[in-house]
Image (cartoon, rainbow, N blue to C red; front, side, top):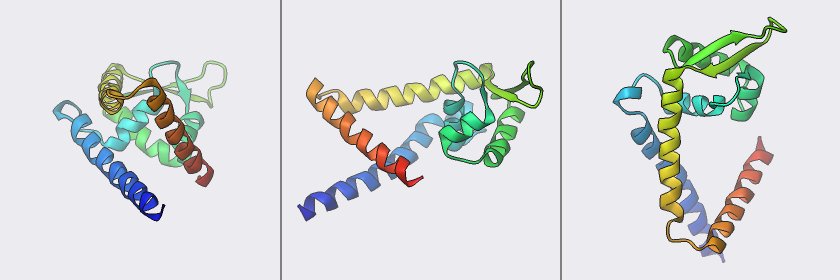
Length: 146
């Protein structure tokens, strides 16, 4: 049993490091050379649906609003993100993606889709369910540590 835990730990740690490195190479292309992998994850958190306020985005990324503000300022300057004040309450600022930001979002989403398809391509439905359950348990563990 100890070998199983060791192997699982090694695979998870290596997988995390590999995903971060490979994702950066795949996602930060010549077109998106002016942003970081972290910026791309902020763009992902903003999403393409309805504009979000800073608190909502910060909470989804588990960062402070102050930390997020610095990143958003840079993304606004680079043309990926738009800021709009609420018509009802001028103190509230809504964040959305510009056309350039939407293009980056779709580029990043395509990488994730390719990664997931490659991961489960030879799995049965039952195996997919088991992997989803295991990863959900892992996500719950990490959320409990925040």
